[in-house]
Image 1 (cartoon, rainbow, N blue to C red):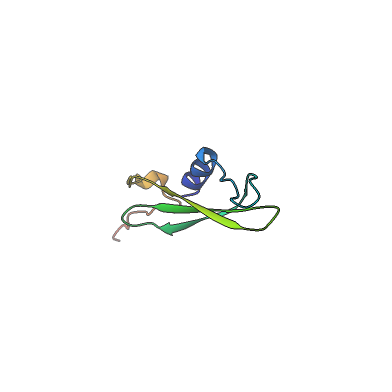
Image 2 (cartoon, helix red, strand yellow; image 1 turned 90 degrees about the horizontal axis):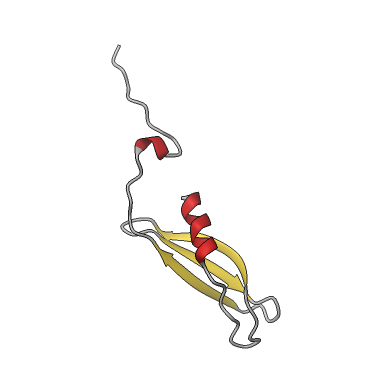
Length: 79
C-alpha cells in the first residue's frame, strides 16, 4: 500500500487555488476505500488563504502474491 501512495503522489499535479491563483501544497494522502477498487485521496492546502482541495486516485485491483505481503503467512505444520 505504501508503494501505491508513493507512486500516486509522484504522478499527481497540485491544483491551483481558485482565490489566490497559486499552486497549492500537498498536505497528506489517505486511503478512502480498499475494496473493491482502491481509492486514495490527496489533500492540498493553499499556503496563503488555507483553502483546501482534494484529488482522488483510483487503482485497478491487483492481487499481491504471498511473498509481497507485509506479513507473509506461514503454513501450519501438524505434529
